[in-house]
Image (cartoon, rainbow, N blue to C red; front, side, top):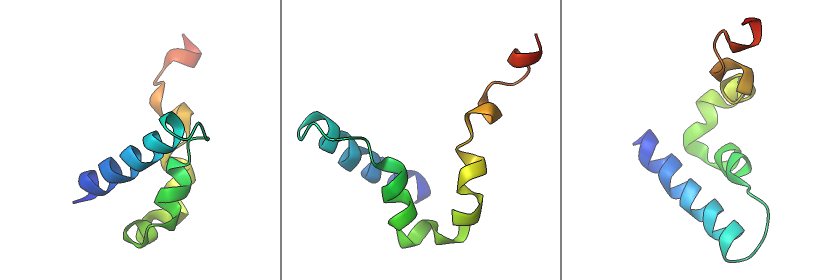
Length: 59
């Protein structure tokens, strides 16, 4: 169910970018969706790019 929610929100945000020429508001959409309320306090950490680079900075 989580994957499906993200997929739908992602498609909506992509349409906004591609069709309307506006900015990508996917993170804002996630923040506004009641489904993700239990993880809102962790969202910044979850989306932190440094958590995806592994040991690259130290190499």
